[in-house]
Length: 406
Image (cartoon, rainbow, N blue to C red; front, side):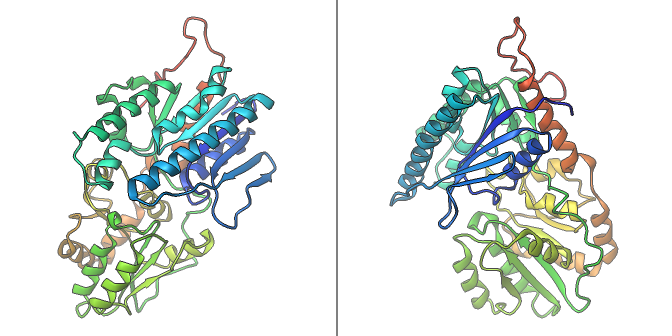
């Protein structure tokens, strides 16, 4: 896609490259010749400033409060103020053509207020839906006053942005149902970067093992306890069965205890932290089956785990828990489905794939073009191109995505 190089700022309250969606989009911008300033969170030991050719990374350390809600509010507020001040100063020095902001939180988009006032266009990447996220994380109903306030702020955030991208059709539908203009929102799925995640034919699963693998953040909502329980029930039936879990998160201590209690500590291996991509990809290639065990709720019915697309890109057959988004995105002829949070049904699904190598091979070959990053990279750059295009007098905001918005 032919676009004149531009200065673009990307703001994300997360760690990069741990957030692979940000990494993919920033890489796509750099490959198009754009200059990118990335503002993100800073881990202990990371440099606050880093420059790599046309990419400049500015990392902000934020404090945390004591309580669950307070901790998040303090972190969000602190990052918002610092990111807003930084992007404003940088814009005054060398104006940006586009400021791209990633949720959560949605209201972080208002950090781009000064650049927008001075002529920059604003792209909001709504990676998740904050009302449903809040309701499930803090166990409130969708009618809770705080959730309704967050939903109202979500719509204000969408209205403030010039254009919006989001990872699933289900998220787009919910935003529109709550009042957003449908022509403004384009689906750009979390497809894997195939320069990193691609088949490794020289790496094969061990013939004397049946290895299941899962990777990413290790939290209770990702359902890895369901996997441990399922493995425990198959301990004697499938002695070759083992699980490898790559990643880090607050649920690791509980999973260690559960594996010990179920007497499968020798069958369930943990990386005890995130590992370099090369190490992860080699481990994925050596596995027999990938597992996505997400626990179903109103939030997960609208989102998809990005690890599913890593498995697709690498040609790894997949076990995946049923949610609305999963059932509406993946054909039952391409993945092995099981009931969310049900160890017995996951054990059934594992058993089926273990005894049916032909089924595993068929799933490994299934890779719909619209699940892949090259397709969605083009969609993302199309949105950026619309923001960089000269604005027409009749439509000074030029917010529409009139073609192929879904």
